[in-house]
Image (cartoon, rainbow, N blue to C red; front, side, top):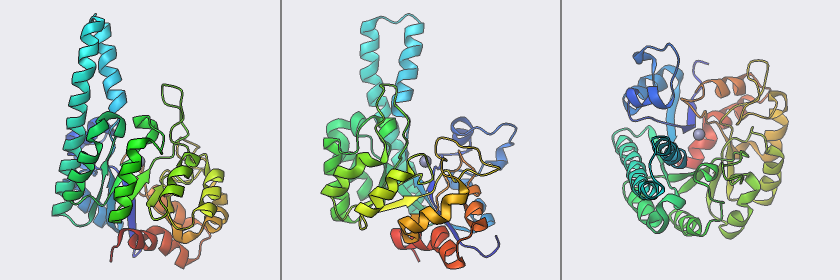
Length: 312
Ligand SMILES: [Zn+2]
């Protein structure tokens, strides 16, 4: 797609190639094919016409703690030792989240084509949530990434209400995962309709619901109608077609995309890829093949994100 500007507003940078190989492994790839760290992403962006990426910081904090507890149990740790380990692991995990926010914000400082949404886990951080938010804002975070099913909190979790208040007054954004997946405790924390009380309470919040083409887009059409001023969407995960089977974040048929996106309002939908775990170019290529007008394609691929993130 030569000449087409793309903004990928849902990306997941890794610290370096070593980390990327562990977190998002690609079978048989030599090291120099990996493109998802601050040192490697700019040439990749240039090669594909991507002017900006927004990296959405997220860490599977609960899963990491549970994995280590499981391992300790297998190795015969006492219940007392496990209780202590849980406390230590929580501190360790908070530190890792802070470090991720740090290195990404440092990358943003060096490279204006990288936009950072900081990781905020209100269950892990508890009383320290606002401290971490303020720290990130002071370092230049342009918004936060929320992942209810991963961190196991509902969107209107009390600590988060303070977070939204701060974001709203600072004009900063928030992007949330919208997975309908149940967390191991059996709750589906992240479904789109769970955001209704938040959108009602914060009429000027700049909320993006990720994965519009996921499996709950009928509910997202309802929300879009109800909240015309504080709700946007991305299409990270792409659509289902002959080459893309249904998956966690892809439930909508590509053949429905034009109809559904026009119903929601093209100006409220942005292209994001969820790369590198997902192919960063696949959803953009799907948009290019669809029966949108050229003006609509331009809006979806870059124009709407320029507006939303205040880019030139
Ligand atoms: Zn993502």
